[in-house]
Amino acid sequence: MPKKFVYAKPPSNPSGRWLLSDLLWEKIEPHLPPVPKRDLSKGGRPRVPDRKALNGILFVLRTGCQWNALNVTEICSSSTAHSRFQEWVEAGVFQKLWAEGLTEYDELRGIQWRWQSMDGAMTKAPLGGEKNRGQSHRPGQARSQAKLVV
Image 1 (cartoon, rainbow, N blue to C red):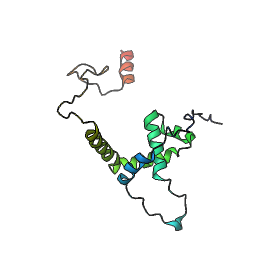
Image 2 (cartoon, rainbow, N blue to C red):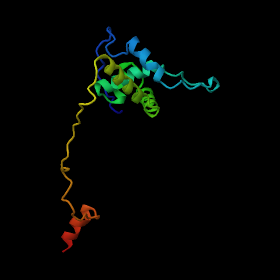
Image 3 (cartoon, helix red, strand yellow):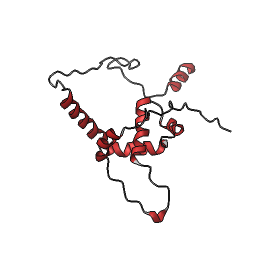
């Protein structure tokens, strides 16, 4: 019988620490794509509410846990959260939210658009080899066997 992984549950949530506030939800909801019509004659489970799925997505993004660890939190299932995340990325939801957040912050506090910086690093890859060196296309095992045959 395979081992079952046990994940830590998030802290108890009396304060709603991991959940969206009503105020934030009111700002986010208009940016979500419309819910597709469901054919009731086909059966199946009802769609998980968008707010619940977004709570799951934000939990994963905030904590850095794996998607499958979301199942034990009882926020929503990992497959639902992940599929909704992919759907909303494709629809540009997070891009719109980012732009709106920047605009709102600029109005409240002001962003110094003239002074921006970027961070990056330009270094040689650790195992990248030397520049302009010919690359062998033979597997390493064939090379070592050729040496033994001498």
